[in-house]
Length: 98
Image (cartoon, rainbow, N blue to C red; front, side, top):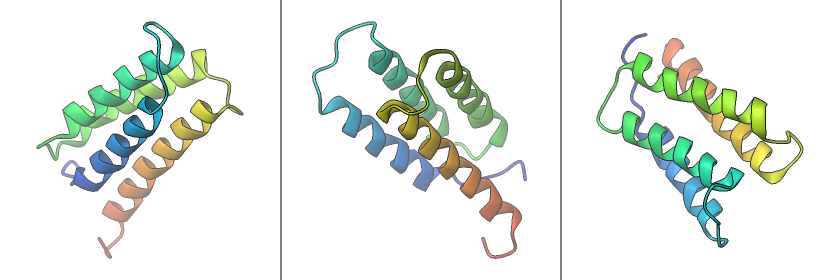
């Protein structure tokens, strides 16, 4: 399972970035840092199929979420949805239907 196509997941994360950026974001706020983490995910997932590269960035996002974001907030829900999409992609890859 080392090779995974991340194109659809990358598109989903890009859409989340655009949604967050619709509001005016100040520098060095939680939203600003979240966008930076999400941009790292899109950058790493572009053109790669290597699971390990993307897994590291997802773990970083989860650490940021746990340390800085209230799970009941809008940003918390976004982080959870992104992680759920990532896990869904991995489950699809493991199944024979992928």
